[in-house]
View 1 (tube, rainbow, N blue to C red):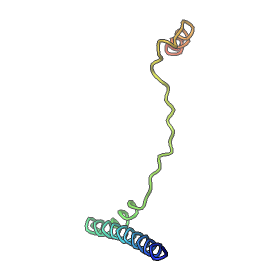
View 2 (tube, rainbow, N blue to C red):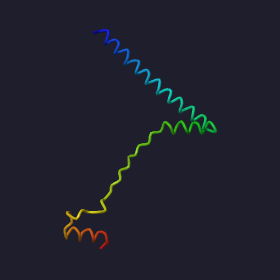
View 3 (cartoon, one colour):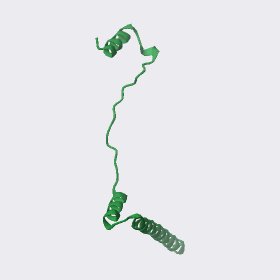
View 4 (cartoon, rainbow, N blue to C red):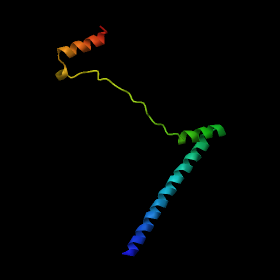
Length: 88
């Protein structure tokens, strides 16, 4: 029973090391491609910075529905929306 636990631990550690090695290889490949593409040292720095930059979209766009279902529309609501649309 204890040998299986030790072997399971070894497998987990090896899987973690393999994942870490693949991640490092991907990062080095990206740096090599940036070095081959760049025409100058400043351009290489800019490419590396662009790779490290994380873009977060924090703008919230509030939208009003253009169409109102007919089932929710009575005469008063219709008049209110028509006056609002026509600016009267």
